[in-house]
Length: 452
Image 1 (cartoon, helix red, strand yellow):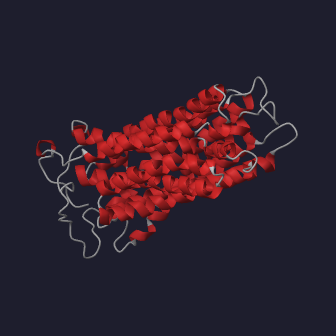
Image 2 (cartoon, helix red, strand yellow):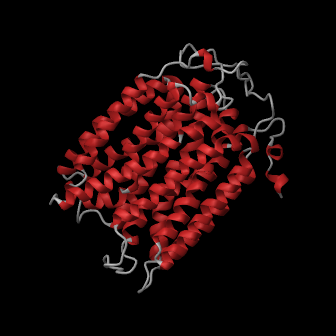
Image 3 (cartoon, one colour):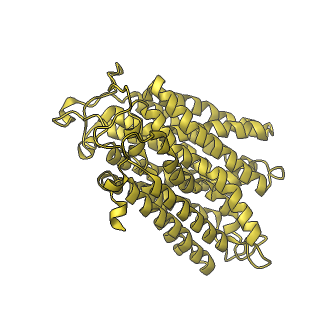
């Protein structure tokens, strides 16, 4: 069984159609993208005992918010420590491990809910599920970049697109399952977790089964390695360890951290946020639709912006993210004040498209600066910025909201300050992006990166 998972068993035969590989990546990312829909469970998890409204012994929304944050922390940590291992063992073994961890995380979380133990939920969905998220997230990226050396931005957009779109499926599915399993004494969360765990495990294992890697020395017909005039694009390679000795690594780390912090806070509380901003006008079912709407933009943005970066360049693309993002974050409180649900939702949708686009463009940005050879390991280490942002973003939203409520601010206005803070973070991110320059030659490996 182990030999079936080895990299050598996944090498594609001669004449293999490279367009058969993206579906394997989508099987993984559409599954783990459920994380972006977890906010649909937030309010129900605060009523496990009270059912219709929170009881004294129920968990608070602030406590629940940490489930998502713990998962993102372990996503980044597992990606950082697993990147070099993935490059060594290949995508099939990594995808299989991701499937077992992510699906198993739901099972353990279901046990935690049934026992009303938040610690067990943290260990299940947060730790075990987070490890599945991290390994699953990075496993298809380098594989698709080697299949599409002529369009690396588009390739990473394909690989990561599903992660943004997973919530579009998971949000309504989760609400439907909870309604199906609900009884007079239960909100149906435990069987919903178990069902999702089974579904995602099977779907991800199918992706692991069909994934393929190109044979050594393979290249697309007619492909000629780029001689791009963009000064950030290198033909050299930098090891993962050496990359961490360069200022470019830390500048990109902060670019990702600040862009993700601004977006992930919205994602983590998307469902309750839209309900509170438009009290009485947006129901739980409509809010689940809003989460799916954001997921559509998140998914589409990953492919659109990453593909555009092949023409525009990675650095200019990130300048668009930061500049347009600042305008939209400042605009949202005013659209909400005007009572326009549709315009507010559209602003959030564009914000989430650039949030997703930042993730999808990142691997190609790293490839441009550090070369292809070690991009998997470097990408994994860069994703620790996601871990940090996974704590910072939700904490800013949750605690600033609570502070506002404690001081008499209406729920509809409790997110205004947070949105202005997010705009400020994007401004700092734009400054970091402006400071990125080519890596000094002393950090290059002695031999140039081979075409892969």
